Each structure stands twice: as structure tokens, then as C-alpha cells.
Amino acid sequence: MEREIYLDNAATTKALPEVTAAVVDALENTYANPSSLHRFGLKSEKILNNSRKIITDYLGVKTKEIIFTSGGTESNNLAIRGITNSYKNRGKHLITSPIEHSSVAELFNVLATEGWQIDTVNVDHGGHVDLDHLRSLITDKTLLVSIMQVNNELGTIQPIKEIAELIESINPLIFFHVDGVQAFGKIYSNLSQWPVDLYSISGHKIHGPKGIGALYVKEGTNLKPLIYGGGQESKLRSGTENVPGIAGLGEAVKKLTRFSKEITADRYLAQQKEYLLESLQQIEEVVINSPTAGAPHIINFSIPGIKGETMLHALERQGIYISTGSACSSKKKGSRIINACGLSQARSESALRVSLNKNITDSDLDYFIKTLKKQIDFLKLF
Ligand SMILES: Cc1ncc(COP(=O)(O)O)c(C=O)c1O
Image 1 (cartoon, rainbow, N blue to C red):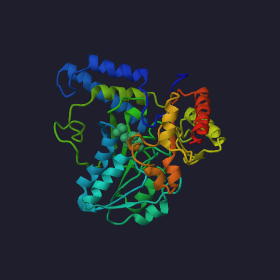
Image 2: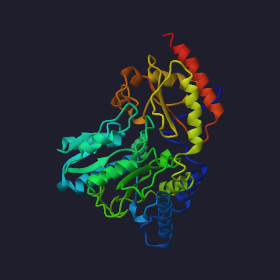
Image 3: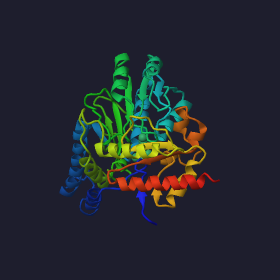
Image 4: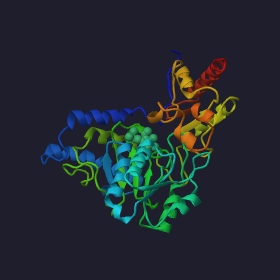
């Protein structure tokens, strides 16, 4: 194989060497239970405290507001179930978007069967939520709104600050959960200034370990846990903490770019994306699905007439790894997300997602484009 290029970083990323070193070090040297009262246990506890501090500094929140979980899926479940279990007497109405990750969408499907009334806010062709529609959906029975910050298939960025302020202006008692898994470390977020109550992150999307994540729970929010036991993580997530994972997560967060209002997205990724987009737009058969001002690491496009999966495997044979959509839904027909945005079935079935990381060079992208063109010409013949 001429070369191998991994362009599936929204599915998962390779751990940084510093992350691997931190994980191995914790496994080998800091293996005591962080709840143990001896000196060795305290050393493990220190790892938890350090990583928690790194994350809270990055997000601008308090240390007690970060709960370690097994990843984005658990964080989303803990946030939504935690609120619905705890506050069900306040009202049984929930609002979400039709393009949420399956860890949110499937949970809402279950909640619907349990008697919760669920409304879905309209989105445009690029997946942006309609704020007027959202306003019209909120009632005095609304308990929680859950909307992701960056969509994992299209890269659509939702205006989280505006949404949070809109919800707060109507009823400050409504909880607002944000799945920040694809946004964290890629675009500007300010949890200390935005009225967001719950925010999910995941380690393996930011060159950290798999199976580790966190949930920001704003002080005063009374969640019911999903898991009962030893009462770790402020009684919200029982079970001996994943110390190596937490060490690695802290290391990964340390390496993230810091954003200010002026720097709204990772500049290197944004440049690479721009370069890729310009090249893709020169291929006649390609239709871009991602909205113009999307996240800097995700580009979604279609080649109507060529099934996404067919192209994925054709590229794979040339050493290029991309995705047809989200890794979790890649076995299903077409893309649920692209369908929800009202794009055609032909576009949905041929959708491909390229997702970048900071090691990808112009030369990698040139190779990708050259190979893609060749495969289009070849597959068009069938
Ligand atoms: C937007 C979004 N939310 C949640 C998740 C789930 O995260 P994890 O794989 O850590 O459970 C993912 C991962 O694909 C994601 O992209």
C-alpha cells in the first residue's frame, strides 16, 4: 500500500504519546484504589484531583462540577436520565433536536415509551436548529432541553449561547443539557458565562483514552445517579474510578488549544478543512452536505449514485480510512442525520464523512483527493 491516511477522527482519535505514557504510568505505578486511606491510595486520588483541575480550568467551572464517567454515551445518559428521574414532578415535557447522537436519540425514544412528551425542534438543511420553533415548543411543563453543540456527522455548530439564553429568558428552571463531545477542544465554549446546566465530553475524541469522559453538572443541579454503590464522584457515579483513563484524559485536555472569543476554532484544523473543501468543490460529482460555517474537523459530502459504503471500501483498499456517517450508525441504511435535515435519499445513501486531526498534511489531503477522483471514475462505470 502506497500510504495509509486516517481521516476518521470524529469516530475516534489516536492517543497522544503523552496520554499513553500517563495511562501506563498509572497502571504500573499508581494502581491503588483512590478511596483507600493509605498513602498509596492518596497518590491515586491525587491523579483524580489533578485531572479534574485541568478539565475545570479548561472549561472555566468549579472542580466539584465535573463528574468522571465512562465516556460521552454515559455522560449523556446520566445528564438526561439524571434530570428526568429527579425532577419528574416538575413537568413531563422534553425538547431535543432530530440530529442528536444515538446516545441521546435512543434514550429519548425510551423516555417516550415511559410517558414523557417529547418535541423535536426543526432544523434546516445544514442541521441548524430553528430558534423561533424552539421558542414556540417551550411550555410550562418543559423540564429539559438537550441539544448538541457540534453534530458528529455534518459538523454543524449550534448557537449554544443563544439557545441557553433563550431558554433561560423563558423559564430559568428549565435544564439545558449540551452534548459537547464533538465540540470540546475544537471550538470556543464558555460554560462559566453561558447558562448551560449539563455538558458532556469524551476522552477518545481528543486524543485521550477510550472509555473515559466527564459530565459537567452545574452546582445546585440535583441529578439522580444511574449507578449505585460506593458513592464515588459525589455519589453520582459509583464504582472504583478509572484512574489510568482519568490520568490520560487530563493529559489530553492539557494539550488542547485554548480559545478566546477572538479565536473561535482550532486554526490549523480550520485551514486544513478549507483546503480540503476547495479541492472537493472542484470535483464535479461531489455535493457538500456540511454547512459553510461548521466545526473545523468535519466535512460531509455525497457522490449521488455511488453508495457511501461502496466508496468507503474502495478508499480503504487504497489505505484511506473515512466514514459513511457516525461510526455507531454505519450499519444502518442511509444517514438518519442527513434524512432529518431534509436532504435527498440519494445524498443520504452516498454520504461520506472526512474528519481531520492536526497531523494531517496538505500532501495527505492531495493524496486523498487524487484517490477519490480515481475511484469516482472507476465506480461510475458500474
Ligand atoms: C456527538 C457525540 N456524542 C456522544 C458520543 C459518544 O461518546 P463515547 O463514544 O465516548 O461514548 C459521540 C461519539 O461518537 C459523539 O460523536
